[in-house]
Length: 310
Picture: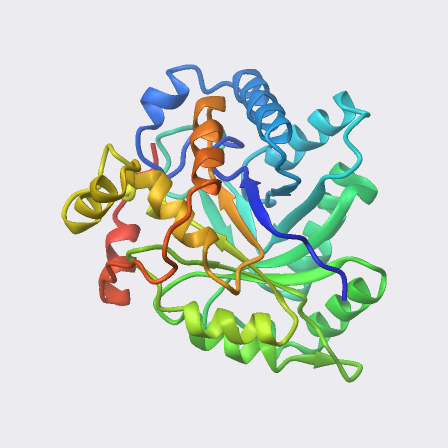
């Protein structure tokens, strides 16, 4: 099975649309969230990431115009032939490029949604697509119970695209283990899993280790807990440990994620070149893999759900 390699990757969730739940967006992005402004910012961040050796880019249909921005950047950089491109389907962006919206994305894991969104992704990214993932599987998702959908995903896998899934919520471990058992044509369907893992919510870790043992590439998202593990928001014991180790809390959090023995890629959600530089410093830190400050998963995800889109 193909591999996505190891090290940092960059996710475009926070730069492909004007609103998201990460902290300090007004400081980092300013007031101009126009399409052109975020297109330029995406290019700047991708330039910095590529210059720093990052070769894995993650996007999604629901990340506003992130697929389009990535395609534009790739077209402007014909020298870039060694970047792996991952995208996701299962949510539709409905934010209308506005900050003030009650709903920014709508979930649909039906076969029809897959057919529609895969066609959209192909029309934007063409043959640059390397990985295609079901976006945010939870126990109630119908995706793993649909023979029609699984057969279509099996065809995609057989065409050479790695098929994966991402997870969210307090039951991530259950979803990962169930998905690992899915086969199509007698062959495991999924080659990549992307889950939220960080110092505050490491509960999926044992399941991700099992996935890695099964030959599945593991991608960590939200290693900074959408801003809660940055100097602007962090408090308590994690700050004391970071100070003791002589590292900013965000760099510590990302370094510990990278230290997990089962991880393939850790996504940065950077929206500025300066943040990319901090992430690259984190990749150079030597830290223990067992540092954590776990919250009860239900409490963690309830807190996350209350973060405002801004």
